[in-house]
Image 1 (cartoon, rainbow, N blue to C red):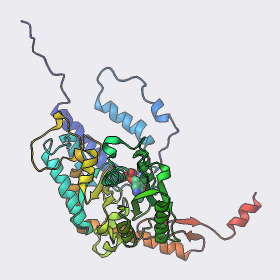
Image 2 (image 1 turned 60 degrees about the horizontal axis):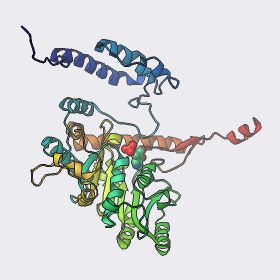
Image 3 (image 1 turned 90 degrees about the horizontal axis):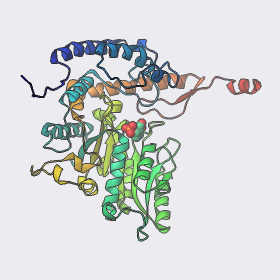
Image 4 (image 1 turned 60 degrees about the vertical axis):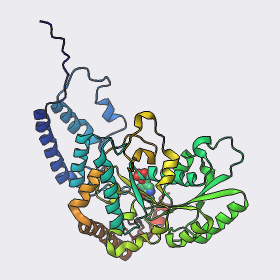
Length: 427
Ligand SMILES: Cc1ncc(COP(=O)(O)O)c(C=O)c1O
């Protein structure tokens, strides 16, 4: 008898998944417990990892055991261990157990939260966790949130919304070939993260449309210089429309004086965006809420739980007072994405991407596992460690501190007595 019924090739069986799943979770638990035994930096030359792996794609099935062998022997030596306690480059990643477990569940559910309908819990948990985070930071309920992959994208959305608020109809007409439009100007400082300038490049503002305001001795925006720059630009025919202030700059963790920038933005009708990608979560400590002074008056705000809130990369929390500008800029609903769900949030309307991972789950688990008290205690501990280090540096004449240390970063250099001289004599 001929069997014409199609048979699915099938996935890994649940039993096999369970077996390898346990094995991998055991490996992760051991890794997290012993990560300090690895060298922080990858021990490979360029191309070394790739050379050890077959150039041709696998044709026949392979075992998970074989993959885990390669993972340990070939990939791990090529990993720079951001989890290592001695990782001091950049703002380190602060993943935690509950966050990693949240990632696992997200991958298992494999939902796509582009519309409320495509996974209601995904959208509603995103709204809820971002509202919890907002409350923890003591920010105004006027801010509505969306989770993005990175602060770079969050700042991109901020500029896009601000440009839309100008009513220039860029959405349909674009910017090119329109001599009637003024040239648009964005204000940042010489300390602002490059992502803001890059967003301006991507949005047709151009690098020439980005004006860098100087900073003072403590690396904070010179407010008088901002005021003067706006006046000068207006007189020269530019259209100022966007200010990016930073709380916790990348190089020194300085913060721009947001309360002084707010009235300037108001007076000239400029959009004020606050990039607190790293530093915003300091406000979770009730006694340190002042760090976000003035932010309630901003139009948009970003902080990255994947930087300093124990959430595995990636997760950037973007807040905006008027999401309608994002929707005006980006909502485009073809027939195959139409739904009849009434007054719901469809996050695909708030940005460029359609498909969206269920990122909120890991943040929700982190927030519930530690609670605001636990999160505040961790961040406060990091700040105290930095203050201790800063005090040691200040007390040692061989070291020089180069900036205030209000958060968990300390900028310093080794400068033993006679160092310059020695170097000079050695040629
Ligand atoms: C102040 C600030 N803004 C933005 C970013 C960019 O973050 P992301 O990698 O999430 O785009 C960084 C990265 O360190 C940062 O320090």
